[in-house]
Image (tube, rainbow, N blue to C red; front, side, top):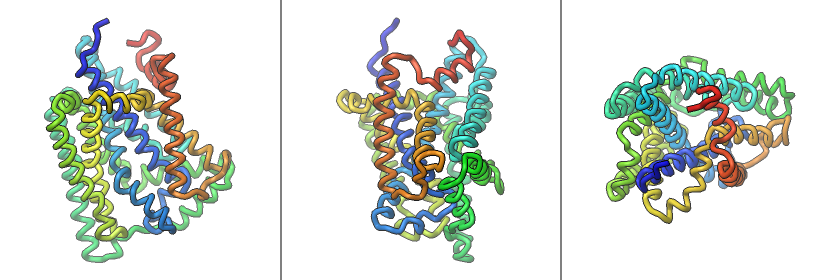
Length: 390
């Protein structure tokens, strides 16, 4: 077997570390909806103590809307990698891609309806079907189209929200859906499994299918898949790793710009929906790019790479770890588990995330010491390729 070059090793480790740390960032945000009715309340008013408000603010600025984009880019990156591999081997990727994404659609629905309604697998898979139509294009074109599709609608919607707020301040205020909050607390906090399942389905439908929300999800997620696919075709991770000085400058520019945008509602008005939208839709992706550049930069040096390498195992098993996080989170908080729903602080949730993810990192390294892939990754591959695999 041909040994990998130092540059190729750095690229592979960087990608897996990006997946692993993205998974941790997503877990921190998801934890809020594991233990509270996050879909339905105004978070700036829900948390009353200064400790909770401070902890939420840190998540809101540094984590929220910055790790989902990063994980989605890695998803698009992986699809493009599979496509190019099939192309090099003279195989058609179309049916392979359809089988892979169909499995993810079905797994996402099972996850959403029977474990946790905040599932992302279904949405990624549906957008993945659209991505299949664009994979024949060049990396440059994918990157340009993805960036335009991301920021042009975001700029237009931001302008509409700002104008709506100028005409009537009540149009742009975060609000809490008291009825839905009460239903969530009753179902998850003290309901039977059947009642919790009904609530899960209602929550998923509200987030994904009501008032055109699925189309909004599509235009919010698809650009990241296109950008990730373009990044693979342009070997962007390899180029960043080979030019650490330029990557450091890129990190600083995007980090400062992203941080300023993410801070907008906290500086101006946290109750204004327009500012929150700008924070997430514009600031979130920009900060995500800075995180990607920073992680690749660190992985370009020997000692930081050694420190980050354990997270690569969690990234290789991202599907298994993502599903496991949902199972553990709901077992801790839902009534059929330990029934702590609505009874923990934001800070407690953060420490739970750190503890659970640390265990997952250790478990992932132990598992991959004996097996080539995680259990759900192996199942996904078997369903995609059959028993032979490729």
